[in-house]
Length: 121
Image (tube, rainbow, N blue to C red; front, side, top):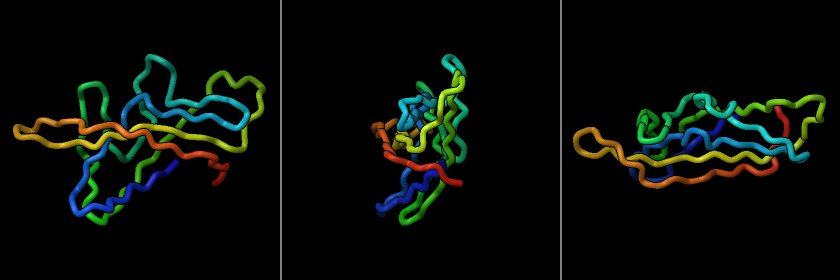
């Protein structure tokens, strides 16, 4: 899924994806996630990561600007179960603040929810 972040404020914002937060459920109750438990979350491209105490502040969006990031989920052990046609997708984003001495502070975390997504190419 490609998500476009648009900054409606008059200040630049820095955002990071909270690793391990990406989940999706289809209308049949099948779960999709960022990867297998215990593996490094590589489900996102184009945006920095917030992983534990490490934060990548590379995703800055200026006032009035937009930037895209790509998110991917995987379904494991599907067997022969049917795949749904509607999906609810959730992940968390953290605004970051650069402090003196190049320290990075997580301001808060927001969960973004995209309900009833359809299949599209």
